Amino acid sequence: MPIELKHVTYTYMPQTPFERVALQDVSLTIEEGSFTAIAGHTGSGKSTLVQHLNGILQPTSGQVLVDGTDLAARGKAALAARRKVGMVFQYPEHQLFEETVALDIAFGPKNLELPEAEIEQRVRQAMEFVHLDYETYKDRSPFQLSGGQMRRAAIAGVIALQPKYLVLDEPTAGLDPRGREDLLQRIVQLHKKEKITIVFVSHNMDDIARTADRVVFMDQGKVLLDEAPAKAFFAEKEIAQAGLAAPQMVTLLTKLREKGLAVDPAAFTMEDGVAHIMKALREAKSC
Amino acid sequence: MNFIELTNMSHVYHDGTENAHTAVDHIDLTIKEGEFLAILGTNGSGKSTLAKHFNAILLPTEGHCRVAGMDTADEAHLWDIRQQVGMVFQNPDNQIIAAVVEDDVAFGPENLGVPPEKIRQRVAESLAAVGMEHYRKFAPHLLSGGQKQRIAIAGALAMHTKCLVLDEPTAMLDPSGRRDVLHTVRQLHEKVGITVVYITHFMEEAAAADRILVMEQGKIVDDGTPAEIFRQVAVMKKRGLDVPLAAEVAWRLRQQGVRLPERILTDEDLVMALCR
Ligand SMILES: Nc1ncnc2c1ncn2[C@@H]1O[C@H](COP(=O)(O)OP(=O)(O)OP(=O)(O)O)[C@@H](O)[C@H]1O
Ligand SMILES: Nc1ncnc2c1ncn2[C@@H]1O[C@H](COP(=O)(O)OP(=O)(O)OP(=O)(O)O)[C@@H](O)[C@H]1O
Ligand SMILES: [Mg+2]
Ligand SMILES: [Mg+2]
Image (cartoon, rainbow over all chains, first blue to last red):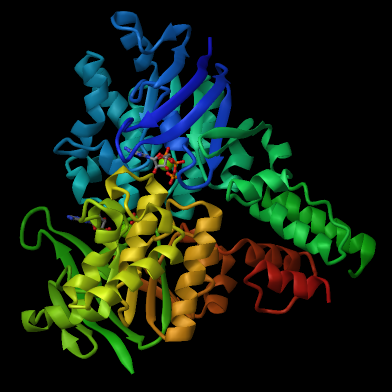
């Protein structure tokens, strides 16, 4: 069963001078087993949108259903539905609070009332997932870490919950290049092997190209485009309107093409991009 | 002239306790006045710790840090140093002070004793430079992640310091926002001649600097021009870092026998070389 947003409108601080409509009549269905990216310019409503997926924010009007259960309902069913959705916040500081990294990551599993041994096992696995060495970091304070290390700790805390739906708000921001690539690959593996449904917010079309099967562009609280990435990357008008940029390889190949090299711009990986250029060079010799 | 000088400088967190952690390890470094320096390094390599010494937020636990000739450990200079070096923190939440955006941006210049009418002008200019003029009356803690980051940058711009230290200023921005920030910083560097220290995980942004430092485990392991640093594609990847896309494409094309000039850092460089 999916996560469904039905005509969701969200207004921050209604009836105050700060009133702001951050989402306007958004309807989306996140199918089970899908991998969805949410992109859009600063302030377009991405974080507001994803915070609806596990009920941190409740729609001002409209409904959010997880596996058929309305998150706004009271009682056990709604709580259980919310727990199916694990959420990594945009700023990791907003979700770290325990004294040590290990305690922080164990917090969620403890709430699920799992046995001690299983909790430790999950903490170890989650730290391994984000490449934080267990022995080195388990007793460190989460607030005395570097920015990238903090983000890894925050992601580990949600991975340890083993949620059915995993929602990540700009998970690779602040990670170094290898850390970013490793994390993306591991999320893809999780998706493939464990059939976990992924929703992630990203400004990085290269990351989206390599992972997602669907991308939603947000613009001023509305859905601007909802497409397969391979198509979305060539929607120039929408990309510009959303303050985004095509993947770097597509951008480079398009520039070469504009200067007269007959190269196919539809390449998202280094290997494909180089192959397309070589092919064009062999066929044309020069521009 | 040297603007920042580090001699044999270390920073050990919790120095002298069992939790002691060496984050910056005996560094010698000089940054010239008017230079645009980018710092690269994997997570935890010591970039932020190093940068926090440049305006005396952190003090060396060993060695010295001099800014415009003043030793940062000498408390008498603290005011002078902060007047010359503005800082944009990695997390904008650590920087937001006031309850209204325009007061937040005005906070720095007010502290420097800038007259009110000048402050108003600076606030307007700085907010315009980051595209946030419409949010003047807004509450900064109620903004989106990227909007907060822009406000933090505006606050540093409004101080008109001789040197700007920016710690991953574009991490939460969309591509157009990233372009704007880098452009603004480059303009300040070129037109006003300010010294820039720019920490980033985006290799294309580092390519816009005059000089790049590479850090690893608290030490400087490489120091050179973008062309020198990004020529070493395999070395950079082994370090857990990367090179700009165009530099890697050029490197791979050369390996397949395509003749290309040495210095290719940007798409434009590569287009020029291939489409002569
Ligand atoms: N707590 C809040 N109170 C009032 N307005 C808010 C609050 N949080 C966000 N907003 C406003 O709602 C709009 C949408 O914000 P949101 O955080 O969803 O944007 P976003 O797309 O995630 O942006 P970013 O890429 O910068 O993180 C913005 O205009 C923002 O200023
Ligand atoms: N307050 C602190 N107390 C103890 N150790 C700290 C503290 N802040 C950072 N460290 C440690 O010092 C080392 C350097 O951290 P620093 O924040 O300088 O890294 P960085 O290069 O900026 O990393 P990132 O790219 O993740 O921001 C890290 O190993 C980190 O865990
Ligand atoms: Mg956001
Ligand atoms: Mg840092």
